[in-house]
Each structure stands twice: as C-alpha cells, then as structure tokens.
Image 1: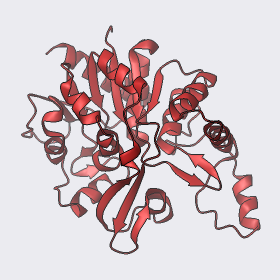
Image 2: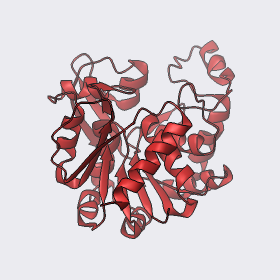
Image 3: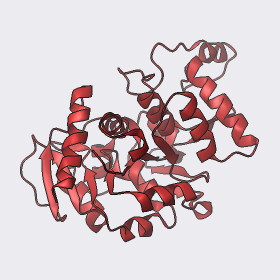
Length: 309
C-alpha cells in the first residue's frame, strides 16, 4: 500500500492503531507523532509515557495485558525505594528504568528529545519514524475541584483520574515549536490520521504546539480522525468522564464536532448508531482493537477508505 502516512497519537489506543499501521505499511511510509504533554520528572528521571508506550508496542516488548510497560518486568527498584521510606506511587519497572536513565543522561548532555527518541527506537529495532510533538518541555496541568491544579501524572496515576476536572492548560507551551522533523513528515505525507486517543489529553497538546494547527490546516491531503468513544463510553481511560466534566456530550459525534474542519474524514465504531458528523467523509469500522488482527483490519480499512475518496 503505497502511501506516506502520519498518525497523531497518545496512550494505549493510539499505540494499538500505530501497530496496525506498522503491519500494513512499509516502515519508511509511517511516521508517528506522539503526545508529550504527559511527560514528567520522577525520581530524578525524565519520563515520557506515551513515547515509551509507542516504542514498546512497535518493538513487541509491551506488556500486552496493560498496554504499557515491558512484559515480564520486575519492580525491585521501586520496592527498595519504598523500603527507604519513599512514597513511590509512580511505578517504574526495572527494565523500563533503563530507558529513563539513558534518556535523562542524553538530554542533560544536550541532545534533543527527537534525537534521543530516534536513538532509542533504532536500538529497539523500530524502523518507523517516531517523533515527539515538540522538543520543548510541555506539561499538561489539570485543574480539579478536589485538589486545585495538579500535574497530569498525579491526576492520572496517583488519583487514578477520579478527581473532577474543571479545566486543562499546557505549561511551557510558549517555548514550544514544531520541530524540523515533524514539519518535514507532515509536508511529505499523503494522509494524516488522528488516532483513537483522548482528544483533550492526548491530541490537543499536539495540536496546541505553536504553528501545528496552521501547518495541518494547510495540508492538501486527506485528514481523518478515529473516535475513541464507543456507545458513549471510552474504550480505556478517562475520555468519556472528562468530556462530560468539560461540558461535552460523551459521544462519537461530540468528538467529530470537536475536531471540526481540521479533518475531512471521521471513523466511528460499527456498533454505534448512525450519526451526523460535520466532516465530508464519515464511515464505520470495528474500532475496538482487542486483537492484533483487528488492529491490522482497522488500519487497512481506514487506508483503503481514504484511497477510495
């Protein structure tokens, strides 16, 4: 299937779609642009959860039960930290820790996050291009009713995304810019796909990088989003809960309206009722990616649908 594709992702759902696309497209034809708003400093290390989930998924290292982390990893370092009295609520596997140690060392030595990610992916045998949304440090800050403003990982991991969200903001966005690698990938793309990731927590940080939305809007290529909401519920994570808290209806149609004219195609799940989306092209496929076969099928269906326009 000869088509250069860029996919915007974050979280487990985005990683599943990236895997499906990776099994359908030649490696040189797929670029994955990844949310880094979830990135944080923990135990003196730079943690990039969405980048790592993509890396571990495409290298077949991922813990398939969780959808994140490394299969068979141990947690002896975290256990030892707790022995010393550390409130180590953010779990990191021992093998996973190696990724963060090296990333931190290379960043502190002056490498960009794009350069570090490229080095890590190549060493894991990944031939697709994986790019952070920006090289700058941008952090999603969650304003909650219960705790005021907290960083994303405190909201998502420590409090298991149960606090009520009042608003979101991106700290450090004023220093961010579209990297040359991201700009080149988008300008060379034949199609752009927005993965079935949380629109507010995973995709909006990518689109909010200064210059990103204008760049995407200028592209004269098919641009398609896949809904993360099925039957009014999120496949995984806080998307549906968050939508309601931010004043949206929890539905695929609300996701389509949120993306609006940034995209011209929208995909929702085959089990959902017919919907009215503002996009020119709308279709249904099976989007709940429980198996690798479904991931591949969804990727192939979306690409063939785009080519049929």
